[in-house]
Length: 223
Image 1: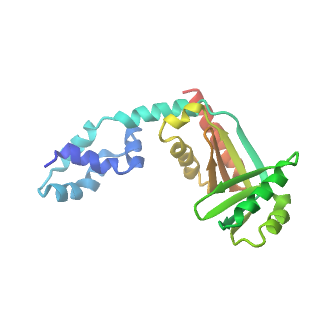
Image 2 (image 1 turned 120 degrees about the horizontal axis):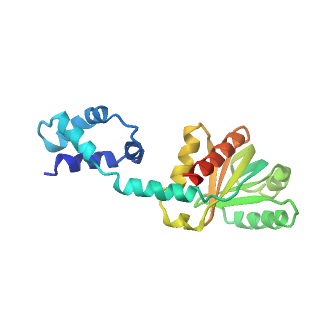
């Protein structure tokens, strides 16, 4: 049978949010011990004193979580420009034998314009296409024979330039998305390349999201 300490750590490690909050000293240890007490007794099949669980929690080392947190903050301090594009519209169509041809046609037209903008994300069963609002009629005409899954008007994109080391550090996207979620920012869609990360939000949220991301960059740059 595993020790109380090992069982306690395994239970806590199921929730990255919980482990992170513990590392930051935001968790009431006694309350946490009471919460997981019944599960520990069920696993061990015997009576376990709450005090033993409290001690097991206090002995847990920040370990990997602390090291990752430091590395993530270093990366966030090196974030590049945060670029906003507004007055956009998002279309999602089901994939079909003919849809690839429609995508190519749209991209060719828009890419040839001085102010042309598009972002395309193709999944297994559907594809999302984001472009400026003035191309609404063009997209609807080209995709007239395709099945429209969703259309959202008045959206904005926020693109974040990431340092090249971002691919080697787990948790970068989680850390950024967490800040936005805590502030009630709803992310409609997200897209990424090797060193860029783009989120799509409602135009009502774009200013708050921009401020949150810039603050995140400033806070960790000075850390």
